[in-house]
Image 1 (tube, one colour):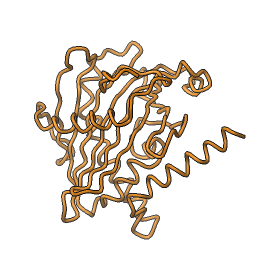
Image 2 (spheres, one colour; image 1 turned 90 degrees about the vertical axis):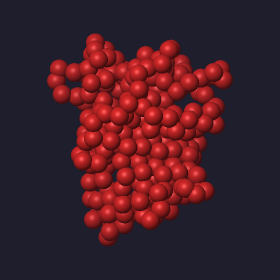
Image 3 (cartoon, rainbow, N blue to C red; image 1 turned 120 degrees about the vertical axis):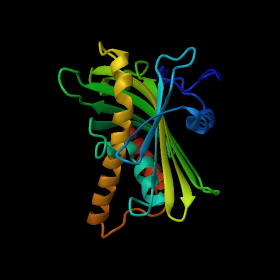
Length: 259
């Protein structure tokens, strides 16, 4: 893959994946600029939104949300394990429009390919968004977890492409960062750019993005609280468990492919 790759809604071929370290570096770079974006509305009293217009060569604007959370919402470990471990299937539980998720392939403990199936109110047809998800956890102070999703084109591998179920293809790129603020508090920041595909005007996508991404925050927190109630007040506590779980999934997937 050419080294000039930039995070955007333009899909990359599954056979030409960008270097992982380049994805991580660009994810951090974009996150560091989001405070300078134009501030928008605040949703649910605490979720601030920002946006910036597309740059030359980009085909969609960028949108960002920022929220801070205390231990009553969840610990750093809880957020990380649910946002980084088995992320595709987890989103079905807190992103209202995500209908299901199909694991295409676990490439490594830090990279996974997912088909994310979205169902919208009529008359908008269901969509599939296929992404490569890359995760990074930094244990140095302040602890920081990064999850990057980039759009993929699966057509070079027909067995992968058929998993998309011939739905209308949408595209999104996103970066999520959780940062330990100390004293049991954390910041959850997400930036994304998206194109719904099909005949849906891009202007409608841009208009709905701030409220849509903000709505995911209470959805996630409420789901986490439900998990706590079902698990005697706590869930996975070690950040390493997300990587360990991904490694186990990769091993299981490799065995299944060999069989």
